[in-house]
Amino acid sequence: MIVENITTAFTVSCIVQIFHSLEEIFNHFEKRWSLWKTSRATFVTFEVLFSLLFLYTLLFQPSFYAAFAKAFLLLMFANGVWHLFWGWSDRRYVPGLITAPFHILNSAIYFLS
View 1 (cartoon, rainbow, N blue to C red):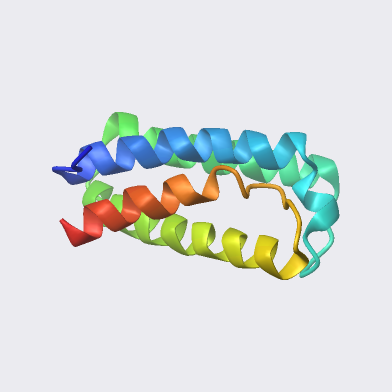
View 2 (cartoon, rainbow, N blue to C red):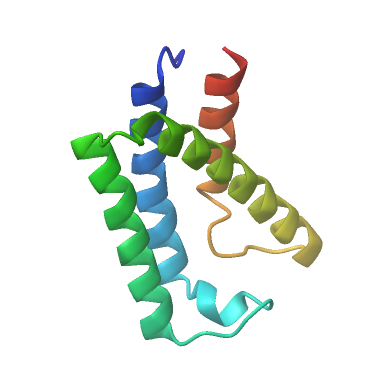
């Protein structure tokens, strides 16, 4: 699939991110992430609010839409790379590892096309 415009790329990224968040929630990302400790409730609340923010931007396309969408794609690319590195360094599955390559692929196709 060739990503022709920002709306297509951002839509795909939002869909991937929903699955990515679910993967992290169901596999207890908050128990594995070593940079800071957080409660399950705090982590799930963050994921829900983050999802609402990007879904609002996708659905209502406010004035900052294009800048937000491009920044989101860049962030999700970095997030995907980080998950791959984290999984490689731990030599095992880490929450978010399955969906991470889809973020990398989608963002790379958009930015390189």
